[in-house]
Length: 100
Image 1 (tube, rainbow, N blue to C red):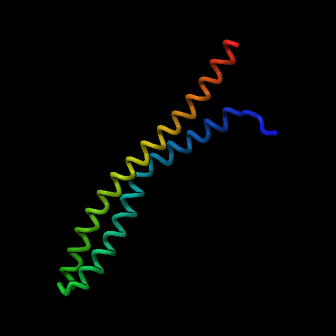
Image 2 (image 1 turned 90 degrees about the horizontal axis):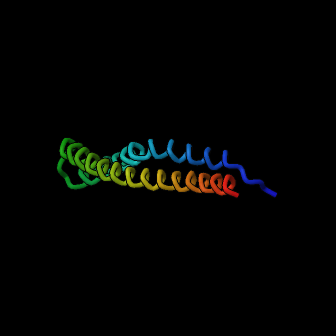
Image 3 (image 1 turned 45 degrees about the vertical axis):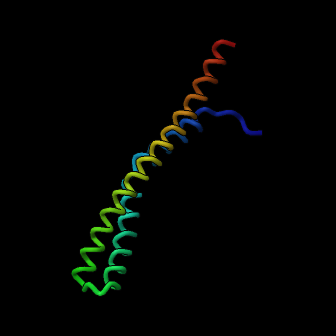
C-alpha cells in the first residue's frame, strides 16, 4: 500500500512552477509558428505575390503569437494555483499532526 509522502507533493509543485515559467513563451512560439505558416499559405493563395504573402504571414504570426502568449499566461496561472493548492494541503496535514 502506498504511504503518504509530502516530498512527492513538493516535487510535483516544483514541476508545476517550472512548467508555468515556460508556458507563455512556448505557447506564443507555437501559436506564432502556426499563424506564420497559415498566413504564408493564405497570402500565397490570395494571389498577392511572394512579398505580400510574407507580409501577411508575418502579421498573422505576430498576432497569433500574442494570443498564444496570453493563453500561456492563463495556463501558467492555473499551474501555479494547482501547485499552491497542493502545498496548502501539505501544510494543513502538518498542522493537524502538530495539534493532534
